[in-house]
Image 1 (cartoon, rainbow, N blue to C red):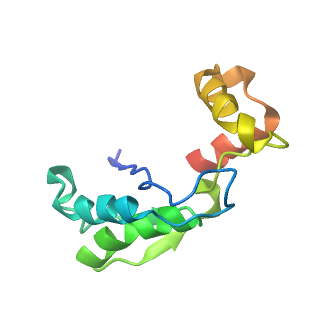
Image 2 (image 1 turned 60 degrees about the vertical axis):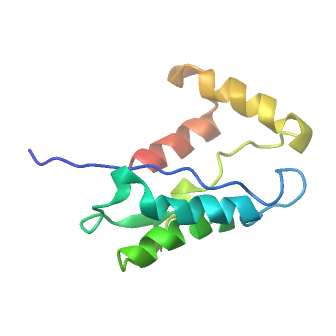
Length: 121
């Protein structure tokens, strides 16, 4: 059986919060965080990795410096987009997300469970 290594990198700081913009890019600090990934000690040998990103602006912008460093194309995959939150009000989303992340997998809503399966596939 072959080995598969996956490195997950969370996006840098977004320029705006959930309720203020549907797809904010990175803030000034977020762009600095993304650029800093180039020097991260555990991210120095990514020549054999594929670079996959959410379609969200902040995720794509976070991936750019490393992709350029390793001369990689960033493949956009919608499965890695926002966790589906249905009709949760933006003011309640952080609380909902915190609760959902602590939830036992068998108790996830159908929408979130399907999203999770898409990511795994």
